[in-house]
Amino acid sequence: MRYEGDIYRPPGEWKSYLLQTTVGCSHNTCTFCRMYRGKRFHIRPLPDILEDIRMAKACYGDLRRVFLCDGDAIIMKTEELLSILDALYDAFPSLEKVTTYAGPLSTLSKTPEELKTLQKAGLTRAYLGVESGSDALLHAVKKGADARQMLEAGIRLREAGFDLWVMVILGLAGPGEAGRRHILDTAAMINEMRPRHLSALTLTLYPGTDLYQEWRAGRFQAATARDTLREARLLIEKLEVDPLHFTCDHASNYVPLKGGLPEDRAYFLSRLDQALESGTGMRPEWSQIGRAHV
Image (cartoon, rainbow, N blue to C red):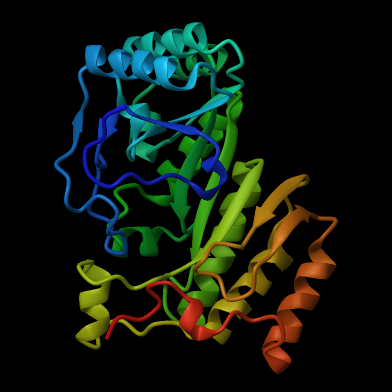
């Protein structure tokens, strides 16, 4: 149980043992992200990872959930991932799921058969940072994959049997028509990809990121709280995936929402309408972690 640098996990993995298989992110140039900027990406040696599993066994005895970090464990060789999965399920009799972030290009580097083999071996859930369905916006934020590649990665993961959890970012395009187009393209992609889970976060401008520098220089206009609420409303209106577990309750979000679509659509829209009309149910600006660093 040895870690290099800061460790990140999705909110839903708060009960999971965090096993660091890679250090940093294989892409690590997204203009909005600061998570792995201080790390040089590399894959940890397999013997070190297996030793960490033995250490976790000695410390915890048994585990139900494991999350493979850092940013893109799916990039590892398939045979190494299979060795890790075998060791985990051998060590922990009660283990129910092993999950990971999945980069779009790393996912596409594996054949559909490899992905199916990993899923059958117990890699049960993949988190895919889609961010936007807009090809132009993905290029602008240097995501490293275009809309076609992002869609294909998500479909491959779903068809391989993964419990697919997608993340998108409200406010990523800024206000006005650009924001509206971003949401319409994103909803269209999600409807075609058909993940089981969708989380909508709100853009946070962090010092040290390229997008923060663009904002400070006046070259990027940040969306307001009301802009992002309108985006959330439009997204919920346009989503057609059934069933869809939908969350918008990250610390970055102004109005926390969590439930299922389509059954909770009317409730979500009502909450957002109340916030837009009177501010009811909105988190105060000071609670928005990292919202504005001046």
